Image (cartoon, rainbow, N blue to C red; front, side, top):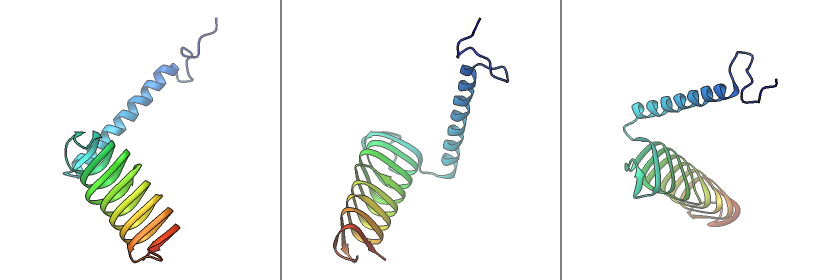
Length: 162
């Protein structure tokens, strides 16, 4: 009598469900190990989850790792800040900031989003509208504004300053 796909044994004698469970367990262990390494390596928060800036776990304002949220505003980020609506950094971000609206004081790395704004950028701004007071790098988008320096103060598609 033929067996269903779920109950068929593999070449090593395990069902498909057992193999999937082992893979999920291994992925969970790898994730836990990475989180542990980040926690040991830094005094800042390795992973921060937020609905809104005031509703976050943990409530720390310094992130060294991943800041994942709907809307977030922190003091510093070293790593990756991903937000659906708003990603804000009051002091400095070293890494990647990605959101519909990305705003920071100092950016060293990449800002991605519909609107990207920063006082001092070293790296890349890539979005529909990019605004920087000072830029050492490249802006890619429909509207690119550099207040101090740049090829032109306002440029379409590409602007740069080095």
